[in-house]
Image (cartoon, rainbow, N blue to C red; front, side):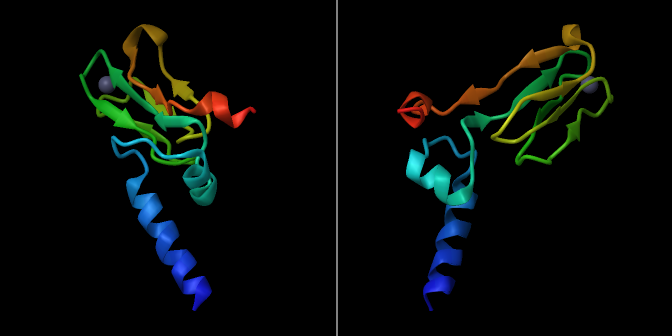
Length: 99
Ligand SMILES: [Zn+2]
């Protein structure tokens, strides 16, 4: 019973991941999310906007010039930096995490 509730809660929180609203530190801990709210870049060549939704979500733009990876944990970029327009955002409350 308790396990079931936990799973349901986890799913609801995961659905909210990358929503516009902020997640609290406790909520991020619950779903295993890091400090990055939006891991996103725009390809200046084709205009495609790509988002890495989780740690091992490697995505490329439609022309293949750039790729993003790392989800909420780290920024991994492939491609020439001149083709990459950063659109990433951190959670607002990352400083509190280190207290
Ligand atoms: Zn492209």
